[in-house]
Image (cartoon, rainbow, N blue to C red; front, side, top):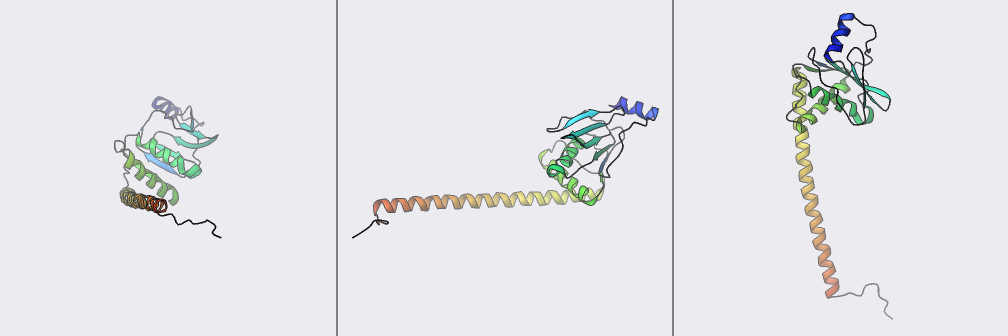
Length: 186
């Protein structure tokens, strides 16, 4: 990949894959990664070294080495942004900066926070201090939601067990002392 990009730069080819989106994740120069396999995505490598990831025939993500362009960041529940964050986690981490529309930046920060909780060995840490602080805030919010969900699950489990005990008690009472409900008496 690096060699292809070097040749393309040296020759100044006009057939480079054009930028079509402002939703870009900037990485360090010459920050190459292998072509990754992502479920539901097909990959084409162009002569300029760009790896174009397509989903259902539509170009979704373009990895140029020093940039990762996300063309349709919100398609299919934001999976393109999540996959782009996974790609960035394979890079050196010398530079990571999200640029584009406010909604893309916010969704990329949220995806990075979720990625960092699951993949502690390959965390995405932005070099922009504001974006790093927003990831830390999202991480705290996610952890609070997880704690709330765990507490809710424990409460729901206790309620279910209580209902099971009450139902068993009711069935036992009916068996020992039938009330003859539903029977017809002349």
